[in-house]
Length: 345
Image (cartoon, rainbow, N blue to C red; front, side, top):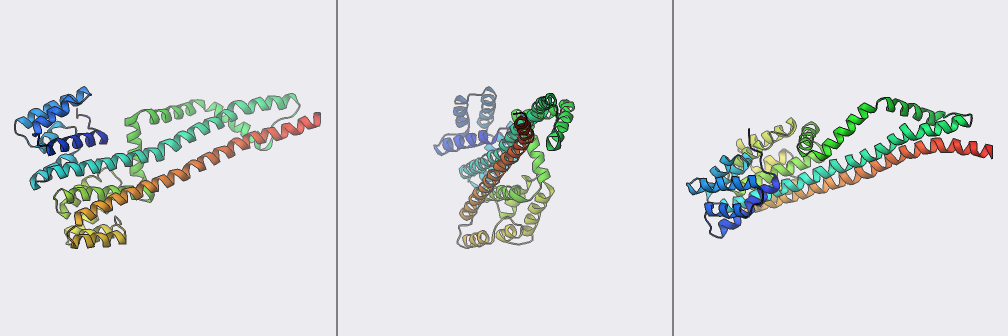
């Protein structure tokens, strides 16, 4: 069975610690041993011990990481390039920046989906209680007074009776929602499915574009050519929708056909016109890597802000809809009851 890969946060912690130890002049094997001594989880301690043994045998860092089976292939490939170009430390720093961005973006995505879904679930539960259990009580009161629920209230009572008959299905849906919120692998699978179905549009398009440019920036800063960087970044799009994969492939093909990186990224909607001009100027001045990194950071920030705005709009809409439903249920039964009580008094 394939070993479980490390999380984005664990990859960041590993690369950060290793970068600092290597900068301090500590050999790879000794650095891994020191990291093992500070590790709390038994599985990770065992992994680091095995990696240290391979390093002491003379294996390169990229080979040690690849053989552990607990890192994405992207990490070992990037570090291998860094080793060939003499930029191992810079590559480790680039890996940290990349996975920090991924981790931060994943948190925003979870917030954008999980919290509104939880809020909607609670409010819908209140509506179900009103329809299934509260309305029949009011109907009994009306029956004793010689009347019955009619109009909107009568329709809601019929809906409540239908929902009562469908309680097994409702309970099944509630169980699925609870599993989505509690079970992390299931949540990851559902979010991944949503990502593929959602395709390449809206806020999701901004998120995917920011991640792609960030991966290209990371590869370029590690010593890859523009074409190699795009080829590597395209491998990260394998789990995404077809539209995004096609956009990535068109960008790669454009550079392969001698188009500049900034033009290829711009024509495939990864960069704005101003970012294209900025990258062009940076490339001509010999600061293309730094400019591309700055652009990728700005794109990540913009995509996070777009997610925050979307989440900010979803929450009040959910609350407003639920309040209207609850208010409609209560008013539809209370107003006629007030008329009857007034007539009796």
